Length: 64
Image 1 (cartoon, rainbow, N blue to C red):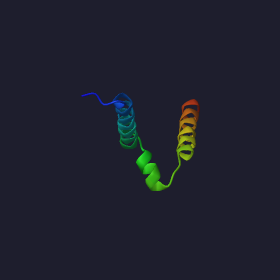
Image 2 (image 1 turned 45 degrees about the horizontal axis):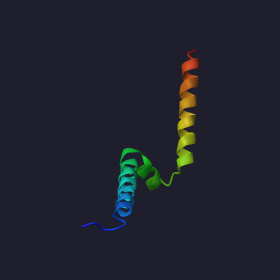
Image 3 (image 1 turned 60 degrees about the horizontal axis):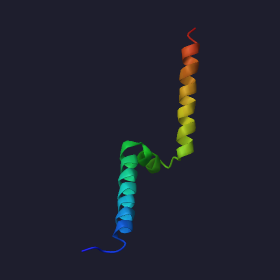
Image 4 (image 1 turned 180 degrees about the vertical axis):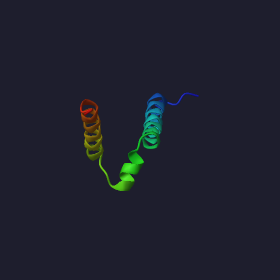
């Protein structure tokens, strides 16, 4: 039995499933959930990491 429009429905449902799985993986495999728990934002973390990297580079260059 063929249901008209089922191709579009399958595509939409598949897209929703992919988005749910991708968002769950991002939540579990990144420190995003700890940032949310600590009230930190994405840009705050990026600037913090950039500061840490620049400090590390300065320490490499200043071996005196």
